[in-house]
Amino acid sequence: MLAAITVAGVGCERSASYGVSAPVNQLKRGEGVYASSCLVCHQHDGSGVPGFQPPLQGSSIVAGDPDRLLEVVIRGSAALPEGYASPDGEDYAAEMPGFVALEDDDLAALLTYIRATWSYEGPVTPGQVRRGRAKLASDEPRPAE
Amino acid sequence: MNRSIALSLVSLSLVGVACAEETLPAPAARVTPTPAPGNAGIELPDGFSATVFADDLGRARHIAIRDNGDAYVMLRRARQGHAIVALRDTDGDGRADVERLFGEHTGTGVEIHDGWLYIGADDRVVRYRLPDEGLVPTEPPETLVTGFTNSFGHNAKPIAFDEDGRLYVNVGAPSNACQEQQRTPGSPGQAPCPQLEFAAGIWRYAPDQAGQVHPRDGHRFATGLRHCVAFTWHDGAGYAVPHGRDQLDTLFPDLYDADDNAELPGEEFHRLTDGADAGWPYAYWNWQRGERIVSPEYGGDSETVAEPGRFLDPIQSFPGHWAPNDIVFYDAEQFPERYRGGAFVAFHGSWNRAPRPQAGYSVTFTPFDGDAPSGDYEVFADGFTGSESIRSPRQAERRPTGLGVGPRGHLYIVDSVKGRVWRVFSTGERD
Image (cartoon, rainbow over all chains, first blue to last red; front, side, top):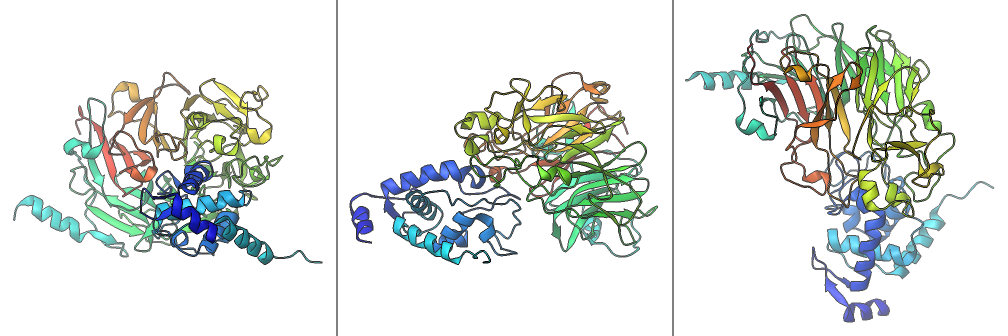
């Protein structure tokens, strides 16, 4: 927490889209992770693809609890409930893979970038990701003994 | 009250949900379409014009046109609880003035065969008996084929009939490239790909037998076809332009970059006979080299060529990710001679070219001599996006997704964004 505040105090810029303060290096790193892992499906402007991938613009998951956003990124569309209502009420049929292989720092940067660009929410720290990931792992159904 | 106001009032009163056994004015015996200003937003070759046959139909997909000019458009998303729009032009101006909604199973495929309206809904194939005079079926549908599994974005079920009246159904692949882990970087392909047993191909069914279950009761006519939204039958063979695989660069960044992925693989144009195998997911077509390349999920390194003769070569190829969504052969006589026997293909337009600009979003024409192209394809209808260049598909104002040729030889083009249907005609026409 202290580290985050310190970084935010010395190296912040306002998001190009929405004016949320976040560490510059984290935003740039997050933009890179978005470009390599997310952009092709959710598009450069977060508008998604009609019929396939939902928009990030206006998404309650993007704007909501970062732990929930982390869960969707890590588990993919398997984390969405049956009959999940997308932001615009349309049906999106494509299956989203889980990005569990991304490291904590990359996930934190990615979540920070997504929230700053398509919501009004603040940064996510690697510590938050580490704790969220551990909680998700402990929630996984255990194999029968 | 002048005539046009009177007609529009009549039209308004005739739009709505189908009522049982209503009496409608007959389809116009003579049709004289008037060009819409600016061809209603599309660019056409010299000598052609367009009018708006119908507009604002909803999430429209394919179209079927009856011998009397009545048209049926499938919806991907139900409108007022209904999946099919029936359209009739009663005054002969080339525009539908009666619009009726019916049917409950949404999807893409629609064909008219032997007095029946066949529907390729996303999860089943059904048929309605068409009334002799009426526009809307009065009997409930008969369910012919069920048992299709969710194909995650590749659910569209275009249908076609051969000369013997047998029914063909496209069943799209439930994946991008049959990876062990769906769309996950570096994940290898399943070998053999189990999805080929029930999907990624064209299946043949009886056209008149209720209760058939996929794939148990069908015959796998052609395989290795990822998803053939553009599929038809013509002169003894199936013709398909499947959607090629996505994400070469993001799944295998050591082998491909964003420029490679924007153009590869080609969208392949195939002539299909019984037993054909076009190679998905094991290989893809590199249209720039004219070679079939082993997929990276199956050990390919972007250069290695697939075993010669193992898979079908395309008869033509288009650039990557254009998303071919319908095909129709032109066997009528209203268009000039050079169009006869050739194929129009509607391209819905790309999304997978990102971060490069998107492409496609047009209707092409390929001239044919017999069963093979006699020349390169050309863009026939363009301007659907409303701007010079777009970076994401949602920026497109219109997206061509359905094609049909009516009894007067006019070409119908269906837009999927808001549901406009253009009626394109040669301006040398005399009705």
